[in-house]
Structure formats: C-alpha cells, structure tokens
Image 1 (cartoon, rainbow, N blue to C red):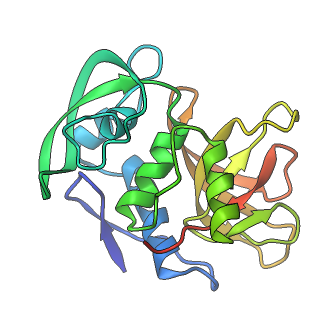
Image 2: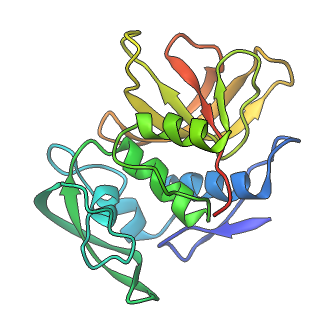
Amino acid sequence: MAVTAAGAGVVIPATAAHAADTNLGIDVGNIAYNQLYSDNAEVLERLSEKGTNCNFYTGFWADPNNDRYDNNPASTCGNSSKGYEYRDGTKSWVTVNWRARAWCADFAKFAFYWGTAKYTGLNALASSFKTYGVNNGTWHSKGSYIPRKGDAVVYDWEGDGVIDHVGIVTSFYDTNTDGTFNSIEGNRSNKVQHFLGTSNKAASVVGFTSPVPK
C-alpha cells in the first residue's frame, strides 16, 4: 500500500503495519509520517516553526477561509506556505497564512482529519485527545495496551497530572506489552520530528487514543 501526503502530491510507501492496525489508523499514521518524509518543497517548509510557535498547522485550523475553521484564537505571525484546504466545498491547493500557538495538537488533529478520522471534539489542547478517546471509547491508559499505528499518544512531561503534549504513533515493535513504539510529533523542539523506540510504559506516557470513523 502507498499513500499520498496531504498537500504534497508525493507517494511514499507505507511502513509495515502492526497485525492489529486498522485501515483508518494506517491512514492517520501515514499522513503524519508523510508530512516529515515528503519531498515537496511546500510541505518541507512547514516542518519547522518560524519565530515563537508560528506554524503552518495552526494556520490551517485558524484560517477563516478554511471550511474546517476551528474558531479558536491564534496570533498572526507573518509567514505563509501552500497546502490543501477545503474552501467552499472544493479541495484546493492554496496559500495558508501561518498562525501562532502551541501546535502539537494542531499537528495531530491534522493527521486525524486528512486520515479521514472523526475529529469533532479535538482542539488546540493536547488533553483533548484523551477526552476524545474517553468520549469515543478508544482511550487506553499505558500498561498492557499495545499501541496501533495512527493512535494519538499523550504525554505528561512534569508528572503533575497535566497532559502537555501529543503525537501520532507510526509503528509498534515487539509483540509483548513491554515493547516500544515510533511516533511523529509536531512542536517537539519547535519542529516536526520522528521519535524511535519510546517505551509504551515510559514515565512521561499517559496513554493512547485510537481514531474512530466519522
């Protein structure tokens, strides 16, 4: 199976799927993966923020011309690049003006959206991915759960019970419950990055939310 990156037009082979992966999860995971590994210049431009939190993914959601405008506040910040949006019901390759806010959740929500998962209930807060999972019956606290491709992984960096960050699982390896996963995450050190070999029982991991169909 191969997929086309949202806003890229480049086809990249999908990574090997875990035996329990769903087609929906594979699509969500591939969207996240292909953002980082696209060879499209406009997509590569969006992989690092410009200035403090100024980024494409927030610009996508905060664009009032986007049919999927989220109506949440985000500061204007002066940068732009091209990407796909639905405007007036038509998918178009358009200029997206970047906006500024903490953007890990905007990146993960982008992967859910273009991966055709339900995204209602998700917002600019990483914690919204846990709430989404609880409300849709797909929340899995860390421990015995083996994450699937396309799951959102949420983190608590400070160990204070507050969810600080979210990324998208792209693969899991080892078949036991002490295995490790790979993830693509936005707004890690101000850019999109690929993290390899995170333990699914790491102290910072709170749990995982699987996407659900629209």
